[in-house]
Amino acid sequence: MKPDKIRVIAICVFRNGNKILAFEGYDVVKQQTYYRPLGGRVEFGEYSDQAIAREIREEINAEVTDLCYLGTLENIFIYEGQKGHEIVQVYDGRFVDESLYDKNVIFSVEKTSPFRAVWLDLDKTGPGSPPLYPPGLLELLEETKIPA
Image 1: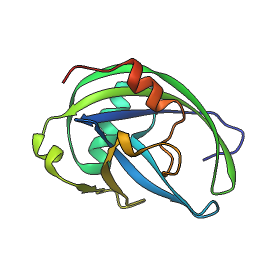
Image 2: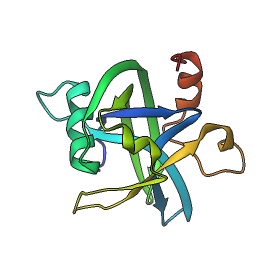
Image 3: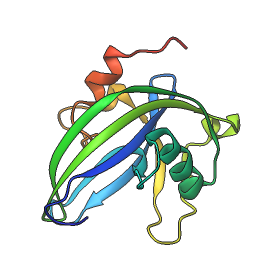
Image 4: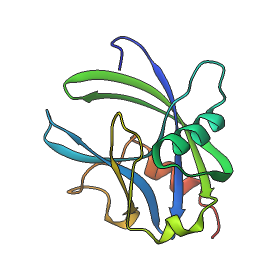
């Protein structure tokens, strides 16, 4: 992350009942586990829904469908001791490969920064639990409940 720059990212909440797929991260400075839906930086000349499709393909080698824009969140944060600022485009979507909903853990295929993604139970988030980023995501998901 470049200091003093605002970065635009797009993330997608893949819902599975009351769970969403989130990557499990760890901030060494804070000594804290955290969760964030999959996605990443929107590149110049790319729409945010295109960024979702590209990022998911790069991260877990999966295709997405039925992308639906939910809203935008702004996130000013400290990660690994560095200040960051993001504009976050939030989408809901589905995997083309339905078998991904049956996996407890999905490992990344990216060579640069491997991670694991888990189905995070939204009922088990909140005080006393590792944070779900970006702030305001849970409220946005409540406001935009999509029927199963």
